[in-house]
Image (cartoon, rainbow, N blue to C red):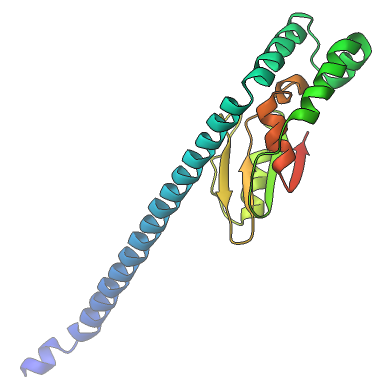
Amino acid sequence: MAVAAIAPLIPLTVSAIATLINMLNNKKESTKNEEEQRSRNAEIAAQNEILQKQIQEYQRQHQEQLKEMTALLSELKKKELNSFEQIENQDKEAKEALIRLARQAAPFGMEGINVAIFGKTSSGKTTMLNALYGKEVAVTGIGEITTRLASYKAEHFVLWDVPSNNDEVSYMSLQYMSFFKGLTRRYYSR
């Protein structure tokens, strides 16, 4: 008689146990995902620290060129020359100085396949980076979201998310030129 009384409860008990097992599995999966994200964040932080050291070393080695480029870019800004075309048409001396400095800029030492996406604010650079990566690794949104150079290492390549510059002259620093020369591929999003 006692078995007959609890028999209707057996399916409910089995269902409750199955639910608990699923909850535990989901928690394990969630914990695994959180651990993977923490590991990825640590990897990105380490890559960015290496990048910062490379930039500092580059700046130390090219102090004179950097001073000359900074002065030249300041002069172009005062003259309100914001594109390559404007510089070519209105300041031949500045054009020649830019070409000379660009030729002197040594490529940044990068290993493997490195791809960067350049472009104006809200042109879809980070969205494209996430699509190429196959999942969302960088935050997207409206306006200026990417404020510093960041790398995202995939299995066979490294994707670089580059901060927006809404005029061509902003990309004319020696650091950008060296970075640009060191890349395997470049994409400009308009």
